[in-house]
Length: 184
Image (cartoon, rainbow, N blue to C red; front, side, top):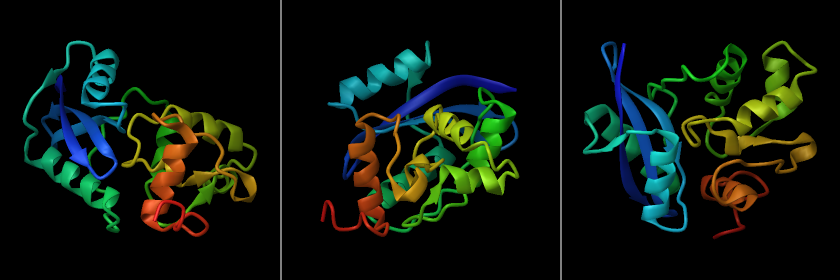
């Protein structure tokens, strides 16, 4: 039981981000996607509207505003905990949801590899599948796919706008080892 998709844009230290949600009868609202900055606010808005046809830009309800506040804090360098933000991952496969659940346990400033997530799922040979799930992550930052690296600590890919440059910037903001001084 979900309502229509709503969204809001919000300013952060890295640019204008977006968040989309649906009203629910259980938790009030659940986030369906987050969007890192595009070239400008209009481009971020257009991306959200392409992804969620018919979505309406509006003032976020209290729970979503709390999520926005936590996202801004994280992007300002705080160790914000986003793990309790309600998500609507109904478009994800059961495997993807399991991957996202593990990823949400990775604390700011720390990382795991695709293989380590596969091991935590009890599927040692599923590192590539974990990578594909991360590539389809609808909620970057809340599901911190930027904290998931390739073997040996290599960056791997990043499907959000800006690619691995954005991934590196996010890791630097969080002070992840080997990345904390790149954008200081």
